[in-house]
Amino acid sequence: MIHVDVAIMGSGIAGLSLVNYLKELTIQQGKDISLAIIAKGNFDQTNTNWAQGGIAAVSSEIDSFESHIEDTMVAGVFLNNKEVVEKVVTAAPEIIKDLIRWGMDFDKTEEGNFDLVKEGGHRYSRIWHHKDATGAAIQSTLSNSSRHLSAVSYYEYYAVVQVERDKSGIFYLRLQHTETNELQTISATNLVLAGGGIGALYAKTTNQPICTGDAIYFAKELGAKIKDLCFVQFHPTGLYGEEQTTYLITEAIRGAGGVLRDKEGNAFMVKYDERADLAPRDIVARAIFSEMKKAGTKYIYLDATALGEEKIKTHFPSIHAYCLQNRGIDIAKDWIPVVPTQHYLCGGIEVNSFGESSIENLYAIGECANTGLHGANRLASNSLLEAVYFAKKAANKIVNLAIENPSPFLVEHDFKATIIKQLSRHALQQKLSDHAGIIKNTQGLKDTINWINETLFQSTLLSTYSLADIETNHMYEISLILLKDALLQKKNIGVHYNEEL
View 1 (cartoon, rainbow, N blue to C red):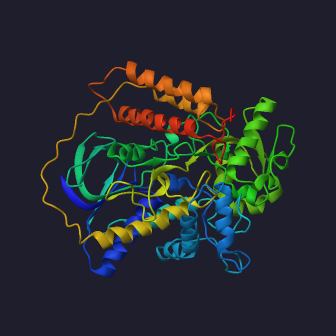
View 2 (cartoon, helix red, strand yellow):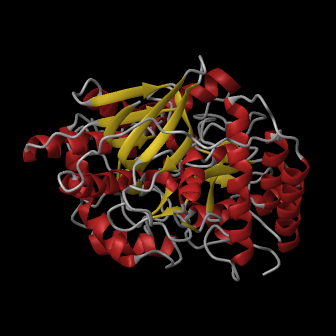
View 3 (spheres, rainbow, N blue to C red):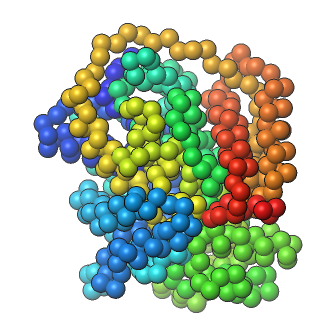
């Protein structure tokens, strides 16, 4: 067993930004902090790597912090923490500078200015991007800048399967190698959960398959507060297909002039919102769902043909290549079949303005955290911004406390026996998709809670089990929290829509 000052679970933009900030601060302040970063897959197998759109930050003279703040509050239906929104939005330009300092290459116009674009819910063009693969560029940048740092232990292809905290406040993590099943134990003075979202709970998702909500499960087990877990955002335009993992068609295409059309070719969004195709995601997703239901179709269309072949190949080369190579669809000439799909968790582990949970020295940053920024619905391209901002705040807090909490002398830790039941992941995914998706109803929520409780009661205990079994058990427990939270909602707000309210 090794002991570190900070253990970081997750290697996306939140986790890797934290590593960079911690190392910069320790150098500046002459402190020595040991880190461990743990990734269930390889370090690039993250939702960050798949993010297409970009990162929101005010830059132009016609834009303003006040405008970005208001757009964020409107999208979140004013359930956001306005103080947090103000802090994140006003810090955004500095966050962009940090990313550029670490090596991020944002797109520029022919004149040499940064090429800022517009997305749904934003009144102005304030999205910094790298073509249609911003997340991949950020992931690569952060990976390159954070790898091979001194005093950092790297655990690639290790899943966290158990987390406990002793009476003195030290965290103990049991890790299992995803290929060899080798077990390792790490202890840490500070634990930072940056494990992403809960996409694997649904039948269709844009998330990586490894996103089984482990960070939220462990936070719950440690006694941390979980808030607004039912606020699950569905992206309006996932490429229609039979696979669970859905290829995302970025909102920036609609920002550039793409139009949603029904099977007859009619542009329908103007019927639902005056902002039409650029309305916030919750409104667009429900509108598409309604059109599909009325027409009895499995998808609608996104028409990007008016953008022209040159613009599409310049600004959306990844999407153009993927659709052409995998589906035979030339998006410069053909309409794209799209469907709403689970995309982003707006709720999660409740944290303060430094990313601290209700448990001392337990932090949560990135998608698994509920910071108060998003409210009941996330504004496009605010999530990457949020991840870096809270990584920076958490890093400052951790470094300032480093000397006050020196690492104690440790002995081997005996973990409690793990109880794992034989459960069906597919059955759960179908239940949640049917009853906790874009449109919910009270009876469906109650029936699903009863089904999970009965399933857990009747399922047999496994004496030998796989990592997938452990993950599936976590997923059932998280689903109960999500469903119960949805039942507590007394009105339709943001991404939560109960047809019986």
